[in-house]
Length: 346
Image (cartoon, rainbow, N blue to C red; front, side):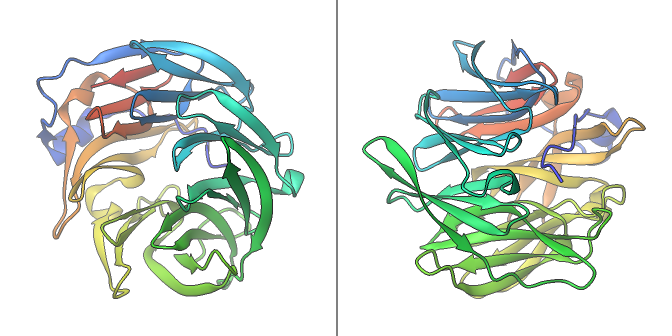
């Protein structure tokens, strides 16, 4: 299953009423920027904001400069945008798969085909800070290792994972993160109809030998993203597609203890993406439900991550429809969110 399930989100006034409104950026003017294609991913780091667009027939990426969109190049219609260890990356998933290695300014340096061709449905990029870049394979359950040197990148080897199975389901590698000398790989378990068949598992992997040293379990199923903050692993699960039974599990990587910090069933929405503002605060893209055409309703919320959680819809999003991607630029203290052919900056 492709990561971008043609999810175009819409903000709903009913959800804003239900959860209340916070005003983290009330004094900021919202800037609206037009793009060429509907936006499926956005990443803003330091002085560079990259936008990945797709209408599921064509794809392209561009850069936001001086609050204007500048198209840069064509890419596969099924792709993802990532950033790790000082470089941007585009993961192309169709046409046998390709890793596009980019500069910190968003310019393409090299394009490398994946070694296991069409079977490498790439999901997740992370780096060790010392030149090695790791890319996960969704179906193959392997991790491709690349090495950066002198401003270029080359393929090095694969890490084949020993994966715990779940009864009635097949494991899929959805996301990767690197922390404290270890790779953390997030596994979904799905049945033949692509429904969740077991709780998500997170593998702690030694990158030197590929050994799985610890396995953590989420409190929910169908993981879409993991993030690590202050030695805490946050696991975002979307649950079953029409049930709103996902949530967020926080796992202490020292003790292994875990706690639920958000339940989709309680708030009537499932988490899709998290962007940390600080150690105790983040923005969440929250899915409310699907329409008859499989488009989806969503809103962006301000989330307090410590102790008992609070979830407040961001008041400025009242007029924004079909939210599809978010990115928080820490150096600019700016939230970017995408909706169809527009990016909103505030």
